[in-house]
Amino acid sequence: MSDKISKYDLKRTTAFNRLKETYDIGVAISSDNSQKSIFLARVETIDKVYEDFMTYHNQIISLISDEDFKKYDALRISADNAFYGSKAIKYQIVGDNSLTNNSTNVSTPKITAKLPKITLPIFEGDFKSPIDLLVGAELVPHILRSGRVLGEPGQPVALETIFGYILQGMAVSDHVPLHNSTLLSCHTSIESNLDIQLQKFWEVEEIPKISSLSTEDVQCEEIYRSLTYRDQSGRFCVPLPFKIPNPFFRNTCYQARRLFTSLEFRLAKNPELRKAYCEFMQDYLNNGHMVLIPPEDYNSPTAYYIPHHSVIKNEISGPKLRVVFNASFRDTNGTSLNDSLFIGPKLQQDIASILLTFRFHLYVFICDIKQMYRQILIQPQFQNFQRIIWRFSSDEPIQEYKLLTVTYGVSSAPYLALRTLQELANQGESHFPLAAKAIKKNIYIDDAICGAKI
Image 1 (tube, rainbow, N blue to C red):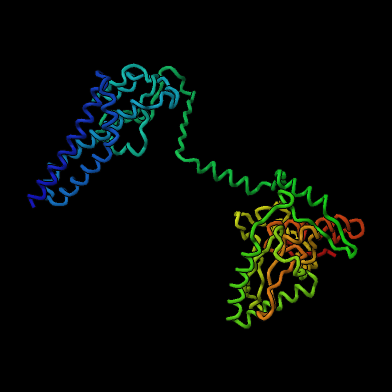
Image 2: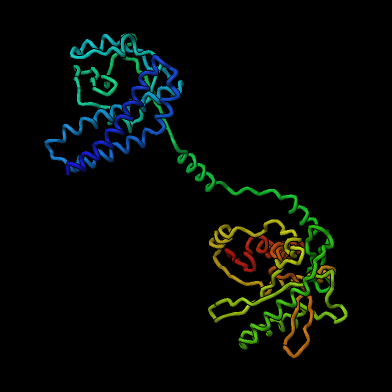
C-alpha cells in the first residue's frame, strides 16, 4: 500500500511543482514583462497538468485513512490556488479592456469602517476604476476560502478568496442620493442558439416568397412558349428543351442493344414478368405512344437510345409492373439526354396549400389524370432523341422504336407536363373558369384534389 502511495505522491508532486512554477512566473510578470510569452506558453497546458495532479491526488486519497486526509489534502489546496491563480493572471493579460463600463463610485472607507477585523488594501480609494478581470461563475466556488466577516445590516459581507478578501452585498455611495438607483446589466452568450431559434420561428411563420426564375429557367420557358402548339386533334405538341440545339450523342445504340440483351436474359427467367413487360409495351404501341422505325433508319448516329428496365410497384390490388426509361444513361463521351436538357422551373403547387384548400370544401372529389405524361406529344423533330430497343419475342429480330410522348425518366418531363396543364388552363379559362382554377390550384403531380362549397 505504501509503495503505491509513494509512487502516486511522486507523480502528484511533479504535477504540483509545474503548477507552482507557472503561477510564480505569472506573478513575476508584474515586474518582469519579458516572461510573458513563457507564462502564456505554460498556461496553455495547465489544464492537463492540473488534471494529472487531481488524478494522482484522488488515487492517494482512496488509499489513505481519514486521519491522514488533512495532511495529504493540504497540497491539493495549494495546487488549486496555483491553478486558478494562473488562470486569473492569464485572463488579466489577454482580457478585453472594454468588457463593461466602470462600476459605480462607492467610497471604500465608509464600507470598511463597519468591518474592523479586516483591511482591504486592494480597494483603497473609490471603486470608480477600470475593471481588470471578470471571473466566470464556474470559477467562484474554486476561488473562495473559508473566511467570512459579516457587516452590519445594509452593509456588504467580506468573503475570503485566493486573491484576498472581496466584498459582496449592499453598499451605499457617499456621492449618490439614496433615492437614486443605478442599474447595471451584463449579458453574455457563448452560443447563438436563441437567435437561431427565433430566426427559424419567423421563417416558419413567414408567407413563402415567389422565387425569381434563374437564367436557365427563363431560357426553358422561352423554348416552351415559342415552340409549343396543338395539333388537329387538340393535343399539345411540346419540344424537348435542349440547352444546346441539335446535341450529338455517341454510340448509344450499341450500348442500348447490349443492355437490352441483358434485360431479355432476365425476363426469360421469369415468364410472368416477361408477359407483363410485353403487355406494357403493347399498350404503348396500341395507344400510338410509340411507333416502329423502318429498318433502313436503324442505328441513327444523331439519335439517342434510351435503355429501359422494370420496376415492380406494390399496390393494394397487387404487384404492378412499371417500365422505367433511363435517360440518365451516358454515351461514350460521358453525356446523357438528361444532362443536355433544361429541367425547367418548379411549377408544382405546395401540397400543404392544396390540402388546406381541400378542407374548406363541403363536397369533395379526387381523381387521377390517366397516363398524364403520355397525353402530351413530343414534336417530330425531337422524337429521335427518344428511341428504344425492343422486340416482343426472342425469335424476332431486334427492333427500334421511338417514343412519341412525354416520357417519365426524362428530366424535363415534370416541367413539360405541369406547364402544359397550365397552358391548357390559360387557353380554356374564358370558357371554363372553374375548371381552369382547379387545374392551376388543385393539381398535385397527376392527382386532382377538388371540391365545392355548394
